Image (cartoon, helix red, strand yellow):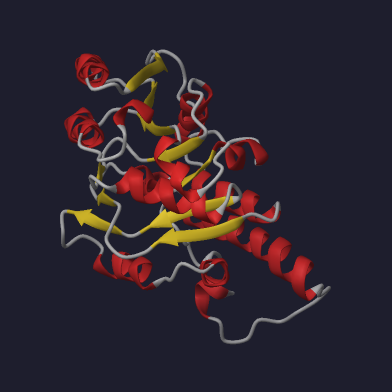
Length: 274
C-alpha cells in the first residue's frame, strides 16, 4: 500500500502489451520501455502473443528478454500458437495481467512508442488521484500528420472527471494506449471483454463508470506516440456496434442513473447523436 505521495517511486508497474503480428513495430515499442526514467527494477513487462502468424514476432520477443533482464526489468512473455483461435485484444490483455503481480498497470499496444517519462508521470498521478481512477493522457501520432482532428480533440480535453465523463458518449475520452490504472480497477470490472472485433476499451471504461469509478488525465506533454497504419485493430470494429455500446452506456449512466426518465425525445442531435 502507498502511504504518502513520496512512496510513488516504489510502486510496482506492469506494462501490458497485447501482440498479434506487427513484428516490424514491436522492436521500437520494447526499446521505449528500456528508456523509461522510472526505477527499472520496479517495472514488469508482460506480453501476451494472441496467436501471431508472423514467426518474426517470437524472434523479437525472445531477443528482448536478456536486454530487459540486464537492466532489472521483469520480463514475462506468454501466448498461444496460431492454430488456437485468437482471444482478441481484451483477452490478450487479461492474460498478460494475470501473469504479473504488479499493483499498477500501464497499457500500450505493440505498435506504439512510450515517451521516456510516461511511467513516472502516470504512476505519480495515479498515487495522487487514488486507486479508483482510470488515467489517460495526450499522445502524438506516427506519422505526425495522421488524424490531426482526433489528436487535437483529445488534447483539448481537460483532466476533470466531469469533463471526461461528459465526452465519454462521443468516443473513448481517454485513448486506450494512454491508459494507466491500479490493478484494483481491472479486478473491479472483472477484466476486459474478450473476442475479436470487440470494443474492449469502451466496455472497460463504461464498466468502470457504472461501478462509480473516476476518470482523469495526465495533461501537458504526450505520454505516447500512437501509431496509425492500415492494419490497426480499430479498423476491425463495426461502427454500429460502437454506437450501440455508447447508447447503452448513456441509458445506464445518464438517463437511468441521473435523469431517471422513462421516455425522452432527441431533436436535432445529428446522425450519431440520434
